Length: 107
Image (tube, rainbow, N blue to C red; front, side, top):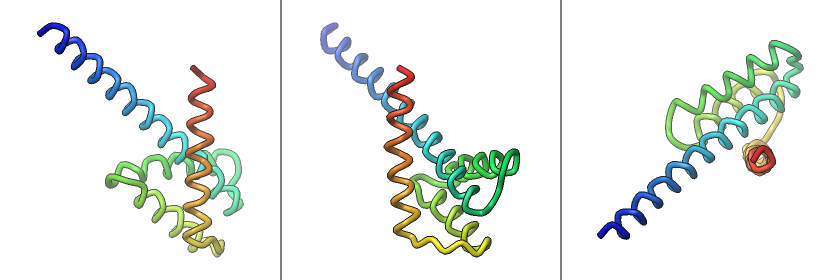
């Protein structure tokens, strides 16, 4: 029975580790997305960093990526920046890949 318990414990540890990595990657992706959107809106320095943080925080509103997408879409539209849903989602995917690579490089 201890072999089964060991396997179960190892699986639970791997699952927790994978979830932690996914959380870090999503937060990093959201920051990258926020920095990109801030640049489009002409924000610089502290204003750009604050905006990027607000994008990261927006991910806590609901499960999934829709809350982040809606915030960025709404903010870009309000700033008169024309980005289609597809363009924003494409950037989200690209930034997720970049975030994963950055985390892997950190070890």
